[in-house]
Image 1 (cartoon, each protein chain N blue to C red):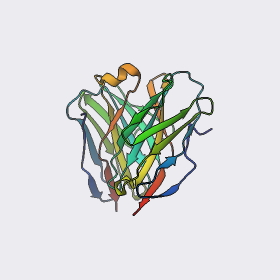
Image 2 (cartoon, chains in turn green, blue):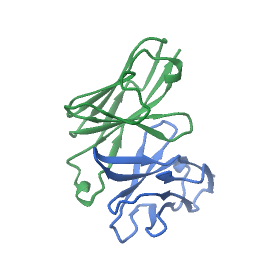
Image 3 (cartoon, one colour):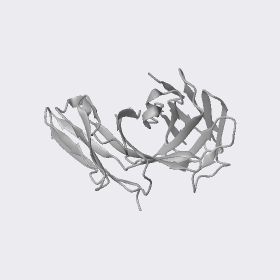
Image 4 (cartoon, rainbow over the protein chains, first blue to last red):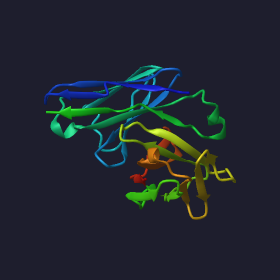
Length: 122
Length: 116
């Protein structure tokens, strides 16, 4: 089945530094990837929709300059948290949609999620 | 209004019993999809089951079934014969079309604990 690899799974950084998180679709092409943020015991909050070859679409309230998203290829999207601060500490998860998934024919459009990246900013 | 509402923050069920996790949704679109995901403590999101708005029959996947009541806008997940490994967070989600493609909305989740 479809697999999405997310790296790193855990990162600790100092305040003021930038951190890059990668999201790769291993066995399918993903024209669209999604980035979420999850606070402890809370739901996923969609941050942005990443489209291959074009600018990401950010949700209201998400700082574009703070959370840089690049989707340079059909299998890779990156999220860079710039000048990280302790309040950016969170669990970040990506998901990808396989355009070739046959279930799309029935409208399923299932997302495959990465394992998530836990960011801790000291 | 909330797109997806999960009113049960925590649920307990005895092993081998069935449990229903509630989910209601809000949309004015005719074409939409409903999903359930399982999130174990590791954090990964695991797809469980899907129901299309035009599907007349309730979706089933092994021990999972989706009780789809369109008029009530509810999409409850039923887990039969609960197992200890079912202990996790469960999220209900909805896909609906938007100008930028499809938009996904997630509920706040229900924490399920299976008791031996």
